Length: 381
Image (cartoon, rainbow, N blue to C red):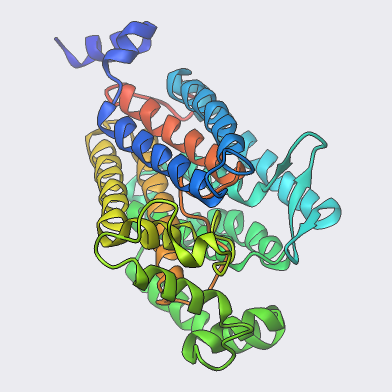
């Protein structure tokens, strides 16, 4: 079969043919993580479907709907819509600044009446799609010019500032790391990264005294000295270490974690769910989830490397970065390796915005894999 014939066939694929190209290698570990999430959230509810497990199950069902739409819609639609998706996500972040719902001391949510959504989570995927669209059809000469990185830098910096104000430092850090990672993948000059790192260090005092809230500074100080305020700023991380460490190799048993079941562990259903997993299922349970995450990242990397069109390749690479950053920051945080920031554990933590955005991202990667042999233009033709 010639190259042109393969491209033509890719353009005319039926649903059954697309299913034949579907990557079960990524889908299966993704589903296993979601199953583990339901198991842990049932325990977090004290052995009840309420208030976490049943609500999350409904969100997972909706998430699968989002996944199917993203995976089986023609990839040309996502190319044409890339900047529109970005614009919608940015408008939602701006709306949060003025009309956002405040919860847990932060103004991060939009209240739509029937649901609260966190636009900063959705923005991560929108940014990946927009950057993939921007860079996909640039040649090596274009990618060597500094001016061609100004627009994508602004695409990150504007929402970055708005998200920091909310305040949501964890998500702001994530979108900055995704953008830097995308710059590296497309081949930006290495000296620009060095200059950027120097500027970041120089800006650190300004961020510390002018851009961070007192509770955020307390978290950093507590990270350096965890015993400084054991019952205040250091309470969360100290309880997390106690819970995780007490799990040992095999754990205390399902629904038998003393720290989590007796409510000593704050936010056990969201940011600190990995700690609850470690307490009840021990090192082996934690290792199982880490193994699944590693498999997912490896499959995403393989998808990116085998994709013959640049847009799909960059979408897979960008989402791989996003997914890795999610769990790297969360697990490092709950183990006390970095200061506490509000980043959920992907596919595990209770909540809808993170779950739906991730399912959308997984669907886009499946879409890129299905259309991996299709040659695409900047106009999606």
